[in-house]
Image (cartoon, rainbow, N blue to C red):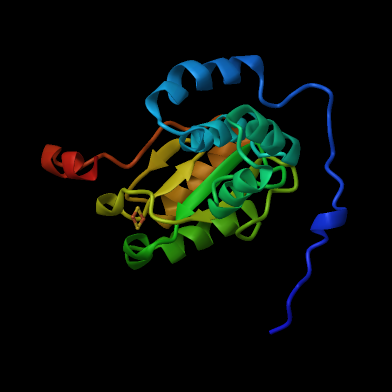
Length: 197
Ligand code: FES
């Protein structure tokens, strides 16, 4: 296998004057998260979530700003951001559909669900629709194996998906431009719902 060299040393970071890590984000990190933890490293995930949530990706400049604010090395921030698939390292569509591909969901029909979404949006996993509205990704276990197969649409969990409902949901997201509320709890007994929680 050949090594694929990355031009890290010569990569130019695109910058903007306005910081990505806003004062409001810094205040929230200082007041809500940092007091809970012994190290600033522990606040790294919430910081990355804030950036991802606001901009729908994590720009390199934002990683530097987080590193400076949390007194970490930029390499630590980048290591973490590149490890988790939910952090986008390049701009994504406005809405993100993340289908769980881990084992319980795979056994319960995830391949068919993913295929239905691909056909409904006419894109492959990792791609964004031509109108920049919806991006399809695959994620590891979302902690809802009891109601597999599941997918996140933005931050809403959709459980017990069928290919038909998955396709309908993503068409709805694309057409309306809004995030549908969570679905898929219909028919669950209170006991099953509490296990799924
Ligand atoms: S395997 Fe999909 S939620 Fe756990």
